[in-house]
Image 1 (cartoon, one colour):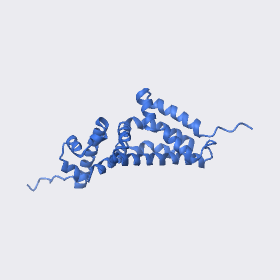
Image 2 (image 1 turned 135 degrees about the vertical axis):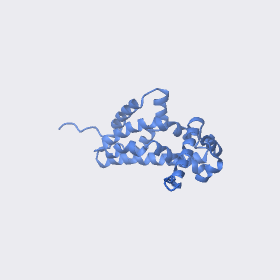
Image 3 (image 1 turned 90 degrees about the vertical axis):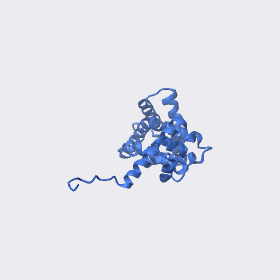
Length: 211
C-alpha cells in the first residue's frame, strides 16, 4: 500500500557486529565457566544458538576467536573509560595511586577469563597468543607509569624504569588479585587502597627532609 512506510532494515554491517559480539559473549561465558579448552567453535555455536557455519562467517579459526576475545572483554568492560583518570592525573604519584584503585576495581570483572587463559597458555597455542597480548599491554601500561615517575624525578632510589616496571607487573598479577579477592575475601576497595599505599611506598621517593 502506498500509504505504508517501508520498514528500515538494519544495515548488514550492524547486524554483523551484533552477531560477532554475541558469539564473543558466548565464548566468554564458556571460558569463565568451563575453561579455555571447552571454547571450541562447536561449543560457541551451541551456546550462541547458531550453526558452526555462522561462527566461521565471523572467525576463520578458533585462534581467531580466542584472540578476538581479548579486545571483546576490554571493550565490554570499557577499559579505556575505566582507566582514563590515570592518564588525566595531574602528576605521576596521583596517577600511580589511581591506577592501583582502578586496577583493583577492574580485576574482579575479568579475573575468571584472565586466569582461565593464563592456566592453559603453556599448552594451548590459541590461549598463548591471547595471553601474550594481555601481558604486552599490561607491561606497556606499567612502563608508562614508571617512566612518568622517572621523568618527574620522583622514582625512588634503587629502581630503574625497567626493574620497577617488572616489579609492578608482578604486583598486579592475576595470582595476587586472586589471592586477595578470592582466597582472602578482600573487597576491591580494600585491595585498591592497600595497593596504592604499597606502590607509593615502594616506587616513590620519600620527601626530602626539611633543611
